[in-house]
Image (cartoon, rainbow, N blue to C red; front, side, top):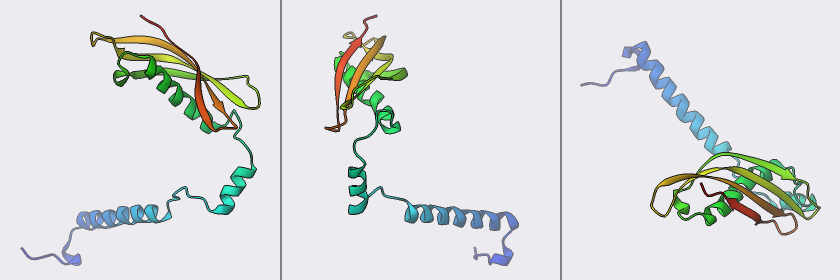
Length: 144
């Protein structure tokens, strides 16, 4: 079977070839232009000079449930079986050094017989603005 020249190809084949090359081009462009998140020394100094992150910061509100779930897993009999449902996060009034979040929700986890049981949980976690570290304040997992 001989290769077809461009003129011999159908309109559909031409569109497919052009579309494929366009997608490849977009992918390569995206990889080249992607910001890798690295900072030069001046950017790092500017971040450090800005001081600690505010308690209402979107990044902290996103990380709080993740940290709370880690502490809830630690309280379960079978942490690897945990499947979290319907979590809600609340920012509590706090002082200058700490940001305190309460995360509530439900978790399905295996009991000691391997049966999946739904537990309600509430976890209060705090973020230390001075140490840039998370720690549990209180973790409660209700038995069904």
